[in-house]
Amino acid sequence: MKEQISEILKRAEDPKIKALLCFCRKYRASRETKYSFYKANTNSDVADKLKLWLIENIKSMDFDKLDALGESNGYTIKLDEITKWESFKENAFRLECQELGDLKRIKSNLNNFIIYCRLNDDFIIGQIKKLGPSSVLMKRGYYKLGFENNAFCSLEEEKHVEITKFYDFIFFIFGELRIGFINPSEASSENFESIFDMQEQYQENAKKIIRDSSIFSLFPNPDQILDLVNSDRVVQKMLMNPVSQRGISDAKKDDLKQIKEKLGMEVRFQIKGDSILLQEGKEKDSLKDLIKALGYHYNRTLVGEYLIEGTPKRIL
Image (cartoon, rainbow, N blue to C red):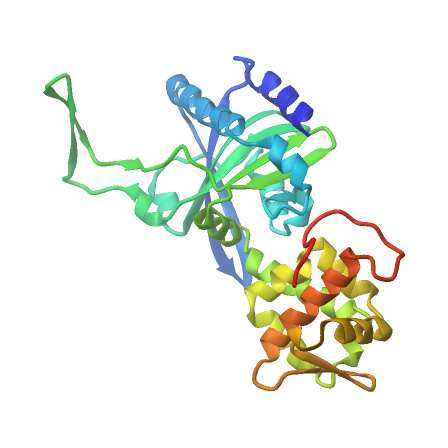
């Protein structure tokens, strides 16, 4: 991947490729999330500064570390795995994207802004940062008094948008490469999830993983399991871990018995007959133990059929 990113940067640094700015409103209509995108006209100085921010942010990323961790590192995601990305792909990067003529148009439901460079549909790189309506300042009668070189040198009525050079999500569209990277800070991870409604997507994906598994029918109360998954973000992340996911999908009743015999009281679930019983009053913790144990079982290749690299190497 590092070689591809180097090639992308080499092309992006071409002075002919300008940075573009787009603001995004997010709102609900007919019980669905909708996005509206607004192209912002910028002068050459602003465009150059925005491009510098984007290039610097890309160069600051540790791609050697990301490559070593693999795609299960928690910060790398394929763009086609983000359900809401389709709206961005179809509307945000088009020249016909509606033009921003008045700040009032974006103040309501403003959600994020995008800085991007586009050569064609197969070459788009950019960064996305969450914003809120409070970032749009339009106070009539209030003025910004600029101070420089020991003197007040400018007076402008307040009419601007506060943005930052920092990012929540950086993305690359380059040939067959369609990938994004979440800023590892906790705040940015939360912003990423908010921008793309990932909470809803995580819930549905995690429920599908457990529902499609061979062990789902072994729970006496399957609806309870779906409720536990739906209500807990940690459980959802555990289920979507590639190793745990494979362990769950491949697990058989005999595997569960072997795991329980091996781990005993270290795990808070029981195998009785053809049923998986979660500890009463500790159902969520018991389910987490089960997910961990199945990932551990798979990764340690106890049945001698698989070899996989990745996390969790040891879960319990």
